[in-house]
Length: 141
Image 1 (cartoon, one colour):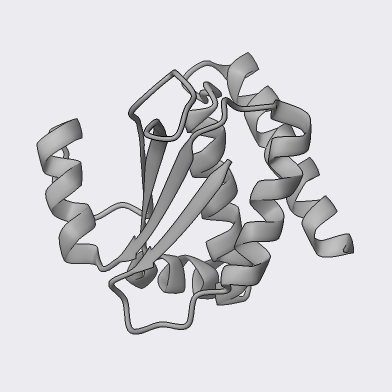
Image 2: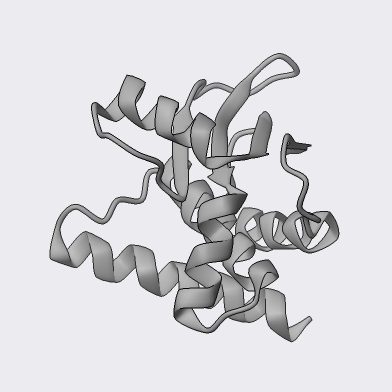
């Protein structure tokens, strides 16, 4: 998988750790050979995407969009948009570091692109358990 990390934010993005986390997830999930884009932006852009695609007002922390379900040089598996503004507020609220929150959001967004969901209770348990496993693996390396 090819990973492209794009930052429109003025905050420092832990690119090396994000790449490592994506590699860990890839080992278990075996996604198609394609590209994954992670875009770090601000609340304003997430609010606009949230309105346009989910008909919800205001910013959110992460939005994931599945694009291609094929593989190949031109295939883009999906895009993950993360608001660094909301991530910073979340980190403060949860007593986490900004880096830990960014990694959690990357993991969460990637799992959505891989087909995980948390709409139903059982699905939520599975998704959040996978999230914990991958984040723990990343931290232990």
